[in-house]
Length: 228
Image 1 (spheres, rainbow, N blue to C red):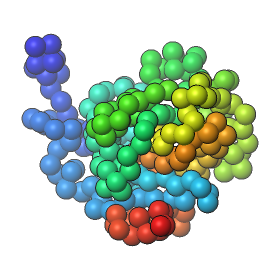
Image 2 (image 1 turned 90 degrees about the vertical axis):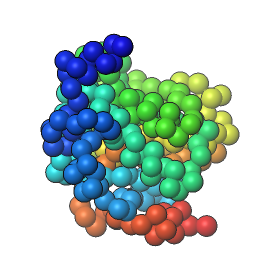
Image 3 (image 1 turned 180 degrees about the vertical axis):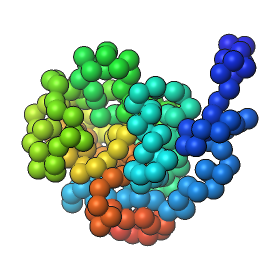
């Protein structure tokens, strides 16, 4: 009833182009333009990141607005595509977690966009969500730094909340954008140090130079990123 009233007074709009939509999380026109393949980047020998989108155009605009207005439809649309990528690979994590935000930054914004994406992705994948990591202090904003500075900026600022909840588990780590992968690498290393069996990273979008990531079919991605 409440949602019906909200839809009446605040009808949903496509998060990518802004047109009014009757149902779904995006308009049919934008959905037809979604890439057929999967974007992937190998962050290290042990760490890969997959994403449904490249960080540019309407997707970039949607993610930037998501960080400002926190509209549910933005999270829902991106999480649906993130879950699609995870399911195409047959990845079945024991738990889904997110790259954490410093508590004061989260309080000021009102939410952590990576947590919102993780919760929704977990629900669509039929897996539990748990906050396994915490950010111990505030750091400089990553997008203002170069690659070397990004790597230094995230050293020593994350910690495990409950190591016993990490040990022996297959973990899906969620972030909104993967640029150099420095943040995800630090978080995956921390999860491994605390006994994680395996970690797969998924982002809403991958950014950076074109030669640092690839658009592949699920079959190509599985062969390139998940060698047997």
